[in-house]
Length: 261
Length: 317
Ligand SMILES: Cc1cc2nc3c(=O)[nH]c(=O)nc-3n(C[C@H](O)[C@H](O)[C@H](O)COP(=O)(O)OP(=O)(O)OC[C@H]3O[C@@H](n4cnc5c(N)ncnc54)[C@H](O)[C@@H]3O)c2cc1C
Image (cartoon, rainbow over all chains, first blue to last red; front, side, top):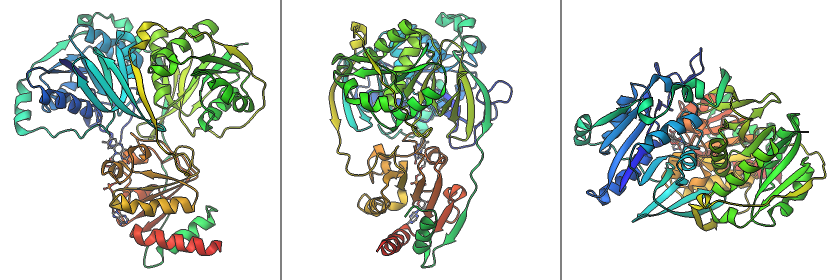
């Protein structure tokens, strides 16, 4: 089985992030870049399948991003995937999610895959629609938000949480499945994994390699645009008391004064 | 006159928020698109009328429930092509985002998700980066196609008498690739919905165990609130994942948010920092949650919460 895992380089969601002042694209140069955190759950899901069938499963990473995305590709490879494809073209910068899905779909068209795994959402844009966008573009099954994935030959079963419980989905390959962080705990790369990652093949594809024209992507091809960006006015700290035996009573008093009780 | 589509198949607060938002745009009459099994539209028609729906497009067929979102997206895309609405609003929950994503691709239309505001000119407001930045954006290809985040505005009723239009449901084989083979509804209990509650009491890793979460539950019940949890608490199995508040959990915006034994990591704050009043209890004086709390107690939650509960109960007698 051939598995392609989509990974994306993003600014660390645990740190302060910003948009660049001139074109409102994500500030990537100054940010501390990491693998979009939920992508690690997708890689883990792929590696669990690969571990269960070491000779039968091949895992390829696919990243669309600038040159420096190579850093996170190497990091992702250290978790175990066999190789990577990096779609890199200056024209792609500024693409929206809908346009990015066109680039990824075009790249997938050049690869062989039975299963595409990705995160339920990225930790920067957070649109949460990639699996369905790819399903619609490629005409393959798309299941999003998996917390459990079972593969039996070409049959896929996904369990996912819903607002009032959970549901079970079934489909056959080829398919795109997006996963939530509740699915698994990503492994830490071993030293051996980190060493091996340095030698794993990373194929670079340009826009023309995937068969798209510059005007179909980037700011020109984007279907939405940011008009303005502002930091949210920071909340300020209010009253703080140290419990010296009366903390609970003081809390009750505060709640009463604010009419919550 | 043009129409604004609101996609809804439940009569809940988010539906009323979307109807209120759609009415305020001044872009056209508010038409609700119901995509569900037969009987869905009738069961909520009265509620939709109360919030100003002037038309209900009822697309009802078992096939819409048997398969995952693709059939719903197909029917909606066709309706949009036929009726050329001025804007389309969907709920920013998993299903709404999925349908919107497919519609965007099939119509070559832009898409904005998790919006909290929209103007009649089609400019949407979105909190991004864990709510730390507010951007305004617009769709540049096609009409405003947006998903609306719960608790974005206060819904206000406005009576209308909706006309019911039956929409024929024809679905391609291509849209039937993912079957929904089982749907399990978990018992809700008596507590309010997490995303709709006026009061949310959340516990974190500091609660220490699943059994001890009863401290959080009891306090929530005392205030008539919902229970939430941090990811560390759900990951540790102290509380079910669906109650997680934060970047990869629910976004809540209650009148009162009480965080007990939660440090206040940026990803947790992402899901609760728009709460009206924030209260925190934490042993660690330096916990970042105190930076955004209106009232903070530095102390052991197992001492503070029971004492507060006692005091409240006494004052009610
Ligand atoms: C991509 C990504 C997405 C994430 N999404 C989310 C999300 O949606 N929601 C979320 O919550 N987190 C999320 N996180 C995790 C987040 O970074 C934190 O790890 C998490 O919020 C920590 O939870 P916590 O505050 O309960 O635990 P901790 O950080 O361990 O804090 C526990 C706190 O409890 C206090 N404490 C301990 N005992 C007591 C006591 N007896 N009385 C009072 N206080 C006590 C401690 O002082 C401490 O401050 C995400 C992380 C990533 C990378």
